[in-house]
Each structure stands twice: as structure tokens, then as C-alpha cells.
Amino acid sequence: MPFAPFEWIDDEARRRADAGLVRTLRARPAEPELLDLASNDYLGLTRHPEVTAAAAEAAHRWGAGATGSRLVTGSTALHAELERELAAFCGFEAALVLSSGYAANLAALTALTGRGSLIVSDAGNHASIVDGCRLSRAETAVVPHADPEAVGKALHAHGGRALAVTDSVFSVDGDAAPLPELADVCRAQGAALLVDDAHGLGVLGEGGRGALAATGLAGGEGIVATVTLSKSLGSQGGAVLGPARVIDHLVNTARTFIFDTGLAPAAAGAALASLRLLRREPERAGRARTVATALYERLTAAGLTAVRPDAAVVSVRAPSPDAAVRWSADCRAAGMAVGCFRPPSVPDGISRLRLTARADLTGAQIETAVETVLRTAPSA
Image (cartoon, rainbow, N blue to C red):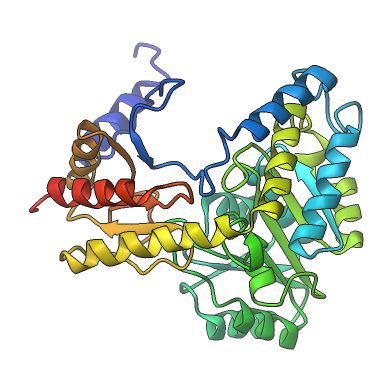
């Protein structure tokens, strides 16, 4: 037989094409040409002059890259400053900045669990949490979505060292986790609670301090959070927030921190500038939520099926994967970018358009967005 080690890839590609699940990369221009309801730039800060100037200044001062892992050469005074201000803003004792939100979830899950321990994970959690569970070598129990009772039962059945993990705001439908109830069951069972607040930071809580601050859980015993700097803060990178002893433990044990090159200084500088800007302009958080509610109310009033947003994500159901792809493409042709979520990105197999509200959208842009989605909606 001929040597063909990757022939199986062609079979996989054909199956994806038949199922309407082919994904392609598309380069975007430097200057926006479309009305953007696809990015996670919830506060409209990624192009803010203060943010881009801070990124440029950090690159000039510290260099284009971090030059190594943070334990060797990649940690700067800028990283430490960002960690102090981020922890204080969100209400935690300490923070640790990593190269991405994905890396932050892997760090927290692998360093805080391990063989013999249990992770209880919501069925709707992000892929980075799923991968962190797999890499942790802990036993993992996947429980029904947003079900504190199921979490409590899984923790009680294990009876040993355990951690429950959930998104604060789920990236597919934009619904919020029942954090107070989850904290109660974790406390009752002596378990830690890890919350990925990627979609809550900058949008929920007083002045955008996040979902844990909004529910009074920030800084609590047994509470750890992960965040991304690439959404509301308009930059790149991620962080773990929690008690100082937890952060010290991660510095010594988390492989995605120890063996990864540190976050580029430009990204750290941009995130720090965004954080300070948000502290001066806390109204941006409420504006993002107002825009999301307006989109939801207008679209559902017109007959579309959508999930009421708890933060800045508006999820609109599509009839099928193919219909979702066509709908997204038709929106783009009409001058607007929207997200298109379909299997395997959605755990329930239901395809959606995903609209992200931004604090800087005008009333006229909201009207345009609603009109475009309605005009291009597929019949089947």
C-alpha cells in the first residue's frame, strides 16, 4: 500500500463539508469596513487612543516581546502593576497575569486539582475549561447546565478534595450562572469554586467589576476567578484572581505559567490603560448591557427566538447549521459582521447567530443592526 499518513484528513474534511461545518479564516482590514457585532470588544476600547498609545509606549519601553517565561526574563514592573490594579478592581487579594484567558483556565484547573480530586463542571462551560479538566488528571463530573443541586450532589458523592467550575456568563447564549447558589453548595461541601468571568468583567457589577463583585462573592474564601484581557479590556492575555496563597501556588505549579512566554508588554500596557479608563468611565458597563437588552427586545418583538441577555451577548436561534452560515454571510454582505455558532462549538447542537453588544454603539447603529438581522433572516 502507498504511504499516505494523512489520507484520513480528506475523509474528515468531506464529512465536515457534508454537515455544513467547514470553517475558514478571513483576514479583516486594518480599518473597519463593517458594523461590528461579532467581536468581544464590549466597551469599545480596543481602538481607544489612550489604549493604543499605552500599548505603543509599553512596546517602546519594554520591547516588542516579553523575551521569556515570567520566571526567567518575561516579568516586568508593568505586569506587576497590572496585577495589583486588576486584583483591587475586581475585589481579590492577588492576581496572576498569563498569556491568554485559555492559559489562565488551564493554569487554575491543573494546579488546583489533580489525581484523587474531583472537578464538577457545567455542561455549558467554555472549551478552555473542558480542556483544563482533561489535563488536570482529576475525576470530572459534567452536570446539567446551571444546576446547583446537581453540583451539590456530585460534590457530596465524592466527599474529598473538590472544585466546581463554571462560566459566569456563558458564551453561547449569554445567560448568567447562578453564582450565589453555587457558592452555597460549594461551601456546604467544603469545595472551592472557580468562576471564568471572561464575559462578566467590564460588563457586570458596579462599574464593570465583574459577576463575582456583582454577587458579593469577590474575595471570598474558596473563590477563585479567571478573566481575559481580550474582551472588555480590548487587549490580549488572561489572569487568575484569588487568595494570595492560591496565586503563589500557581506561580510554583501552573505549567501554562511556568513554561510559557510572558504576556507581551504592549498587551499589558493596553490592558492597564483600559482598566484605568473604565474606572474613570464606569458608565460604559451599563451602556453595554443597555445595548444588549435593546437588541434582544427588538429582535424578539419581530418574531425571532433569542435568549434574554444577562450581559452583552445576544444569541439568536437559527434553523440549521447551513442556515446560520448563510444568515451570517448575508449580514456581512449587507455591511454587518455577526458571529455564527454551530456544532461542535455549541453543546446543545443548536446553531445560532451571536451578536455582541458594544458600549459605543449609537442608537442609529442599533437600528441598523436590528434591521439587517431581520431582513436577512432565513425562512428555514
